[in-house]
Amino acid sequence: MSTFWSLWVAILSILTLVLVFSLLYWNMKNYTGVEEGKSMGHEFDGIEELNNPLPAWWTKMFWITAVWAAYYLLAYPGLGNYEGFLGWKSSNQGITTLAESKEAREQAEAEGYHVEYDAELRRADEKFGPIFQQYAQQDIHALANNEEALEIGQRLFLQNCSQCHGSDARGGVGFPNLTDDDWLYGGSPAKIKETLLLGRKAAMPAWQASLGEQGIKEVVAYVISLSGRDADPALVQAGKAKFGACAACHGADGKGSLAHNLPFGAPNLTDDIWLYGGSERAITETLQHGRNGVMPAWKDILGEDKVHLISAYVYSLSNK
Image (cartoon, helix red, strand yellow):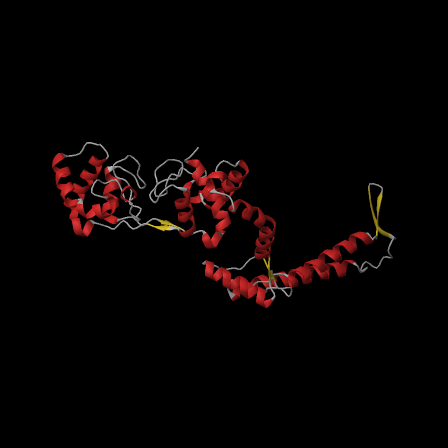
Protein backbone atom coordinates (compact mmCIF):
# COMPACT_ATOMS: atom_id res chain seq x y z
CA MET A 1 0.00 0.00 0.00
CA SER A 2 1.35 3.45 -0.89
CA THR A 3 2.17 5.96 1.84
CA PHE A 4 -0.80 8.16 0.90
CA TRP A 5 -3.38 5.38 1.18
CA SER A 6 -1.72 4.03 4.31
CA LEU A 7 -2.08 7.42 6.01
CA TRP A 8 -5.63 7.75 4.64
CA VAL A 9 -6.71 4.46 6.21
CA ALA A 10 -4.87 5.15 9.49
CA ILE A 11 -6.27 8.67 9.91
CA LEU A 12 -9.84 7.66 9.12
CA SER A 13 -9.65 4.71 11.53
CA ILE A 14 -8.23 6.84 14.35
CA LEU A 15 -10.76 9.65 13.80
CA THR A 16 -13.60 7.10 13.85
CA LEU A 17 -12.37 5.72 17.18
CA VAL A 18 -12.03 9.22 18.63
CA LEU A 19 -15.59 9.97 17.53
CA VAL A 20 -16.87 6.76 19.12
CA PHE A 21 -15.14 7.46 22.46
CA SER A 22 -16.40 11.06 22.37
CA LEU A 23 -19.97 9.98 21.79
CA LEU A 24 -19.79 7.43 24.58
CA TYR A 25 -18.35 10.00 26.99
CA TRP A 26 -20.91 12.65 25.96
CA ASN A 27 -23.81 10.24 26.45
CA MET A 28 -22.67 9.49 30.00
CA LYS A 29 -23.16 13.12 30.98
CA ASN A 30 -26.46 14.78 31.80
CA TYR A 31 -26.69 17.98 29.77
CA THR A 32 -30.49 18.33 29.95
CA GLY A 33 -30.72 20.27 33.22
CA VAL A 34 -33.26 17.71 34.41
CA GLU A 35 -32.40 15.34 37.23
CA GLU A 36 -32.06 11.73 36.16
CA GLY A 37 -35.28 9.80 36.59
CA LYS A 38 -37.40 12.95 36.43
CA SER A 39 -39.87 13.91 33.72
CA MET A 40 -38.63 15.73 30.61
CA GLY A 41 -42.00 17.49 30.37
CA HIS A 42 -43.05 15.53 27.31
CA GLU A 43 -46.04 13.26 27.09
CA PHE A 44 -47.22 11.31 24.05
CA ASP A 45 -50.46 9.32 24.12
CA GLY A 46 -50.26 9.04 27.87
CA ILE A 47 -46.62 7.96 27.82
CA GLU A 48 -44.33 10.33 29.77
CA GLU A 49 -40.70 10.79 28.73
CA LEU A 50 -38.23 10.47 31.60
CA ASN A 51 -34.58 11.49 31.69
CA ASN A 52 -33.16 7.98 31.95
CA PRO A 53 -29.58 7.09 30.97
CA LEU A 54 -28.65 3.98 29.01
CA PRO A 55 -28.68 0.79 31.09
CA ALA A 56 -25.32 0.23 32.80
CA TRP A 57 -24.74 -3.12 31.09
CA TRP A 58 -25.36 -1.53 27.70
CA THR A 59 -22.94 1.32 28.37
CA LYS A 60 -20.25 -1.08 29.58
CA MET A 61 -20.73 -3.22 26.48
CA PHE A 62 -20.17 -0.17 24.27
CA TRP A 63 -16.99 0.78 26.18
CA ILE A 64 -15.61 -2.75 26.03
CA THR A 65 -16.27 -2.93 22.29
CA ALA A 66 -14.59 0.43 21.66
CA VAL A 67 -11.54 -0.43 23.80
CA TRP A 68 -11.22 -3.80 22.07
CA ALA A 69 -11.35 -2.07 18.67
CA ALA A 70 -8.54 0.29 19.69
CA TYR A 71 -6.45 -2.60 21.04
CA TYR A 72 -7.01 -4.65 17.89
CA LEU A 73 -5.92 -1.83 15.59
CA LEU A 74 -2.73 -1.33 17.60
CA ALA A 75 -1.93 -5.03 18.12
CA TYR A 76 -2.64 -6.35 14.61
CA PRO A 77 -2.10 -5.02 11.07
CA GLY A 78 -4.94 -2.67 10.25
CA LEU A 79 -3.78 0.93 10.40
CA GLY A 80 -2.46 1.19 6.86
CA ASN A 81 1.07 -0.21 6.67
CA TYR A 82 1.44 -0.41 10.45
CA GLU A 83 2.17 -4.07 11.32
CA GLY A 84 1.00 -4.06 14.96
CA PHE A 85 3.01 -4.44 18.17
CA LEU A 86 2.32 -8.20 18.47
CA GLY A 87 4.29 -8.99 15.29
CA TRP A 88 1.38 -10.99 13.81
CA LYS A 89 0.90 -11.45 10.07
CA SER A 90 -1.67 -13.41 8.12
CA SER A 91 0.97 -14.32 5.51
CA ASN A 92 4.17 -13.09 3.93
CA GLN A 93 3.04 -10.61 1.30
CA GLY A 94 4.56 -9.94 -2.12
CA ILE A 95 6.01 -13.43 -2.55
CA THR A 96 6.55 -14.50 -6.17
CA THR A 97 9.01 -17.41 -5.92
CA LEU A 98 9.72 -20.37 -3.66
CA ALA A 99 13.11 -18.87 -2.80
CA GLU A 100 11.44 -15.64 -1.64
CA SER A 101 8.91 -17.62 0.38
CA LYS A 102 11.66 -19.56 2.15
CA GLU A 103 13.65 -16.39 2.82
CA ALA A 104 10.59 -14.55 4.19
CA ARG A 105 9.71 -17.51 6.43
CA GLU A 106 13.23 -17.68 7.86
CA GLN A 107 13.31 -13.89 8.37
CA ALA A 108 9.96 -13.92 10.18
CA GLU A 109 11.17 -16.65 12.53
CA ALA A 110 14.44 -14.81 13.20
CA GLU A 111 12.65 -11.53 13.97
CA GLY A 112 10.00 -13.16 16.12
CA TYR A 113 7.00 -12.47 13.85
CA HIS A 114 4.04 -14.81 13.99
CA VAL A 115 2.95 -15.58 10.43
CA GLU A 116 -0.38 -17.36 10.62
CA TYR A 117 -0.08 -19.11 7.25
CA ASP A 118 3.33 -20.54 8.18
CA ALA A 119 1.97 -21.64 11.55
CA GLU A 120 -0.94 -23.43 9.87
CA LEU A 121 1.49 -25.23 7.56
CA ARG A 122 3.56 -26.38 10.54
CA ARG A 123 0.46 -27.64 12.35
CA ALA A 124 -0.69 -29.46 9.22
CA ASP A 125 2.74 -31.09 8.80
CA GLU A 126 2.73 -32.22 12.43
CA LYS A 127 -0.74 -33.71 12.09
CA PHE A 128 -0.67 -35.19 8.59
CA GLY A 129 3.06 -35.62 7.99
CA PRO A 130 3.20 -39.07 9.61
CA ILE A 131 0.28 -40.23 7.44
CA PHE A 132 2.03 -39.14 4.24
CA GLN A 133 5.26 -40.78 5.43
CA GLN A 134 3.43 -44.03 6.06
CA TYR A 135 2.03 -44.10 2.51
CA ALA A 136 5.38 -43.03 1.05
CA GLN A 137 6.87 -46.32 2.24
CA GLN A 138 4.44 -48.29 0.07
CA ASP A 139 4.83 -49.17 -3.59
CA ILE A 140 2.81 -47.08 -6.08
CA HIS A 141 1.22 -50.23 -7.50
CA ALA A 142 -0.07 -51.09 -4.01
CA LEU A 143 -1.31 -47.54 -3.39
CA ALA A 144 -3.15 -47.57 -6.72
CA ASN A 145 -5.39 -50.28 -5.22
CA ASN A 146 -5.76 -48.62 -1.82
CA GLU A 147 -9.01 -46.63 -1.70
CA GLU A 148 -8.00 -44.46 1.27
CA ALA A 149 -4.66 -43.58 -0.34
CA LEU A 150 -6.37 -42.76 -3.64
CA GLU A 151 -8.85 -40.47 -1.87
CA ILE A 152 -5.96 -38.51 -0.36
CA GLY A 153 -4.13 -38.50 -3.70
CA GLN A 154 -7.27 -37.23 -5.42
CA ARG A 155 -7.64 -34.35 -2.95
CA LEU A 156 -4.01 -33.37 -3.50
CA PHE A 157 -4.55 -33.59 -7.26
CA LEU A 158 -7.65 -31.39 -7.13
CA GLN A 159 -5.85 -28.80 -5.02
CA ASN A 160 -2.69 -28.61 -7.09
CA CYS A 161 -3.11 -30.18 -10.55
CA SER A 162 -6.72 -29.67 -11.61
CA GLN A 163 -6.12 -26.04 -12.61
CA CYS A 164 -4.35 -27.34 -15.72
CA HIS A 165 -5.46 -30.95 -16.17
CA GLY A 166 -9.06 -30.41 -15.07
CA SER A 167 -10.89 -31.93 -12.12
CA ASP A 168 -11.50 -35.08 -14.19
CA ALA A 169 -7.82 -35.16 -15.26
CA ARG A 170 -8.80 -35.22 -18.94
CA GLY A 171 -6.76 -32.13 -19.71
CA GLY A 172 -7.39 -29.65 -22.49
CA VAL A 173 -5.56 -27.83 -25.25
CA GLY A 174 -1.90 -27.78 -24.20
CA PHE A 175 -2.53 -29.94 -21.12
CA PRO A 176 -2.28 -33.74 -21.42
CA ASN A 177 -5.13 -36.13 -20.73
CA LEU A 178 -4.00 -38.28 -17.79
CA THR A 179 -6.76 -40.86 -18.10
CA ASP A 180 -5.67 -42.46 -21.39
CA ASP A 181 -2.58 -44.53 -22.18
CA ASP A 182 -0.74 -41.90 -24.22
CA TRP A 183 2.38 -40.53 -22.47
CA LEU A 184 5.09 -38.21 -23.75
CA TYR A 185 7.65 -39.20 -21.12
CA GLY A 186 6.31 -42.57 -20.01
CA GLY A 187 3.37 -43.72 -17.92
CA SER A 188 5.12 -46.10 -15.53
CA PRO A 189 4.92 -45.27 -11.81
CA ALA A 190 8.59 -44.25 -11.79
CA LYS A 191 8.21 -41.95 -14.81
CA ILE A 192 5.04 -40.32 -13.51
CA LYS A 193 6.72 -39.61 -10.19
CA GLU A 194 9.81 -38.30 -11.97
CA THR A 195 7.65 -35.93 -14.01
CA LEU A 196 5.91 -34.64 -10.89
CA LEU A 197 9.09 -34.24 -8.87
CA LEU A 198 11.29 -32.61 -11.49
CA GLY A 199 8.80 -31.12 -13.95
CA ARG A 200 9.07 -31.09 -17.74
CA LYS A 201 10.03 -28.41 -20.25
CA ALA A 202 9.02 -29.04 -23.84
CA ALA A 203 10.69 -27.21 -26.72
CA MET A 204 9.10 -27.54 -30.13
CA PRO A 205 11.04 -25.00 -32.26
CA ALA A 206 9.44 -22.65 -34.75
CA TRP A 207 10.08 -23.65 -38.38
CA GLN A 208 8.64 -20.68 -40.25
CA ALA A 209 12.01 -19.06 -40.91
CA SER A 210 13.77 -22.23 -42.11
CA LEU A 211 10.96 -23.92 -44.04
CA GLY A 212 9.09 -20.95 -45.41
CA GLU A 213 5.36 -20.79 -46.12
CA GLN A 214 5.41 -23.46 -48.83
CA GLY A 215 7.64 -25.76 -46.80
CA ILE A 216 5.30 -25.47 -43.80
CA LYS A 217 2.34 -26.37 -46.03
CA GLU A 218 4.17 -29.45 -47.33
CA VAL A 219 5.25 -30.73 -43.91
CA VAL A 220 1.72 -30.16 -42.56
CA ALA A 221 0.34 -32.32 -45.36
CA TYR A 222 2.83 -35.08 -44.59
CA VAL A 223 2.08 -34.96 -40.84
CA ILE A 224 -1.63 -35.21 -41.58
CA SER A 225 -1.00 -38.26 -43.74
CA LEU A 226 0.94 -39.97 -40.93
CA SER A 227 -2.26 -40.29 -38.91
CA GLY A 228 -4.10 -41.91 -41.83
CA ARG A 229 -5.90 -38.84 -43.13
CA ASP A 230 -6.17 -37.70 -46.72
CA ALA A 231 -3.87 -34.96 -47.99
CA ASP A 232 -2.58 -33.67 -51.34
CA PRO A 233 -0.20 -36.42 -52.60
CA ALA A 234 2.21 -33.92 -54.13
CA LEU A 235 2.44 -31.93 -50.90
CA VAL A 236 2.80 -35.15 -48.91
CA GLN A 237 5.70 -36.31 -51.05
CA ALA A 238 7.46 -32.95 -50.77
CA GLY A 239 6.79 -32.80 -47.03
CA LYS A 240 8.24 -36.28 -46.52
CA ALA A 241 11.56 -35.08 -47.91
CA LYS A 242 11.58 -32.15 -45.49
CA PHE A 243 10.46 -34.23 -42.49
CA GLY A 244 14.07 -35.28 -41.90
CA ALA A 245 14.53 -32.16 -39.76
CA CYS A 246 11.69 -33.38 -37.55
CA ALA A 247 12.86 -36.98 -37.38
CA ALA A 248 15.58 -36.14 -34.85
CA CYS A 249 12.88 -35.86 -32.19
CA HIS A 250 9.81 -37.59 -33.63
CA GLY A 251 11.70 -40.44 -35.33
CA ALA A 252 11.78 -41.19 -39.04
CA ASP A 253 8.44 -43.01 -38.69
CA GLY A 254 6.88 -40.12 -36.76
CA LYS A 255 6.04 -42.31 -33.75
CA GLY A 256 7.64 -39.98 -31.25
CA SER A 257 10.64 -40.04 -28.97
CA LEU A 258 9.13 -42.51 -26.53
CA ALA A 259 8.94 -45.18 -29.22
CA HIS A 260 12.67 -44.74 -29.84
CA ASN A 261 13.68 -44.50 -26.18
CA LEU A 262 14.60 -40.82 -26.46
CA PRO A 263 14.10 -38.32 -23.59
CA PHE A 264 12.66 -35.44 -25.62
CA GLY A 265 8.95 -35.94 -24.99
CA ALA A 266 8.19 -35.56 -28.72
CA PRO A 267 4.64 -36.82 -29.41
CA ASN A 268 3.59 -39.67 -31.66
CA LEU A 269 2.30 -38.15 -34.91
CA THR A 270 0.76 -41.35 -36.24
CA ASP A 271 -2.13 -41.62 -33.79
CA ASP A 272 -5.16 -39.37 -33.35
CA ILE A 273 -4.09 -37.78 -30.05
CA TRP A 274 -3.00 -34.15 -30.27
CA LEU A 275 -1.93 -31.93 -27.40
CA TYR A 276 -2.49 -28.65 -29.25
CA GLY A 277 -5.00 -29.85 -31.84
CA GLY A 278 -4.68 -32.03 -34.94
CA SER A 279 -6.49 -29.86 -37.47
CA GLU A 280 -4.57 -28.47 -40.45
CA ARG A 281 -4.75 -25.01 -38.91
CA ALA A 282 -3.49 -26.17 -35.50
CA ILE A 283 -0.62 -28.18 -36.97
CA THR A 284 0.33 -25.22 -39.17
CA GLU A 285 0.38 -22.93 -36.14
CA THR A 286 2.54 -25.42 -34.23
CA LEU A 287 5.08 -25.62 -37.05
CA GLN A 288 5.14 -21.89 -37.65
CA HIS A 289 5.51 -20.71 -34.05
CA GLY A 290 6.62 -23.75 -32.08
CA ARG A 291 5.35 -24.90 -28.70
CA ASN A 292 6.87 -24.41 -25.25
CA GLY A 293 4.84 -26.30 -22.69
CA VAL A 294 5.99 -26.31 -19.07
CA MET A 295 5.11 -28.79 -16.34
CA PRO A 296 6.28 -27.29 -13.01
CA ALA A 297 8.40 -29.27 -10.58
CA TRP A 298 6.50 -30.14 -7.39
CA LYS A 299 9.34 -31.53 -5.29
CA ASP A 300 10.01 -28.30 -3.41
CA ILE A 301 6.33 -27.28 -3.32
CA LEU A 302 4.65 -30.44 -2.02
CA GLY A 303 7.54 -32.67 -1.00
CA GLU A 304 8.25 -36.23 -2.08
CA ASP A 305 5.71 -37.88 0.24
CA LYS A 306 2.73 -36.00 -1.21
CA VAL A 307 4.05 -36.41 -4.75
CA HIS A 308 4.20 -40.16 -4.13
CA LEU A 309 0.47 -40.21 -3.37
CA ILE A 310 -0.42 -38.05 -6.38
CA SER A 311 1.68 -40.34 -8.57
CA ALA A 312 -0.33 -43.32 -7.36
CA TYR A 313 -3.60 -41.50 -8.09
CA VAL A 314 -2.50 -40.44 -11.59
CA TYR A 315 -1.23 -43.96 -12.31
CA SER A 316 -4.58 -45.41 -11.23
CA LEU A 317 -6.48 -43.20 -13.71
CA SER A 318 -5.04 -45.00 -16.74
CA ASN A 319 -4.60 -48.39 -15.07
CA LYS A 320 -8.00 -49.35 -13.69
